[in-house]
Image (spheres, rainbow, N blue to C red):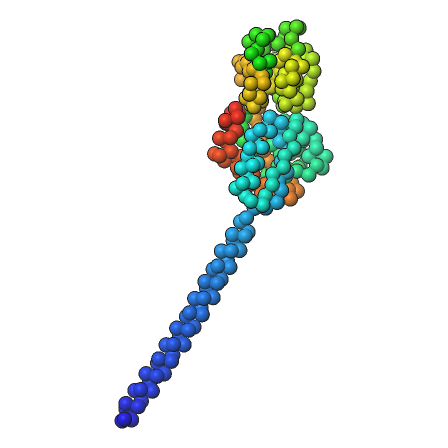
Length: 274
């Protein structure tokens, strides 16, 4: 073999070794990159996963709708739990300002929400997510032939109202004032469900409640609409509360309430769009 041939053979060997080294380095780099990408994707997925319990304080009239939405939320986000405390909005607001642990507050009126915001317990600005209108709940079949708000002033009828401090009671009083009527109920109830129950148990002949409550009661009560209710429609605001334990999860529940899916559940229950 000539000297020139030996030199060329040596050059080819060196070049081949270098190429092999470059390929190995490239494969290693690619493997590291894939590993890094997988780790990054896994980390992002873990950080996006919601967890923990969300405690929601909500107006009594939201009981059926929010219970449904809570179950939907838990199914969509395994590892989460939504617990509720339903009642009169004024009582719930007082509990929140008194230090009761809660993550979300959904009120039946801006006035009761203001109790919470004025005390500095809200995180951010509350937003209206639905509205609600009053209706007269009667005994099934409406045996007393109640046809108007004025009919409730009949002294022979046992009528119950929500307490005036509760949003449904304040709205009823506003409707009565707008029509120039005076009504003396046999009792004032702490929330709208308590007022409705009086009629369901036949302890009262009629009650002024929300349309949504008459709807939820099904055949247990009758329902009578009255035009004065248009003067007393309630806005329902919702807000995240300061000190929420699982902020992202609480925000996600509020987002569900305000979403098209949440609005569908609420409007089917008789609520009006905001």
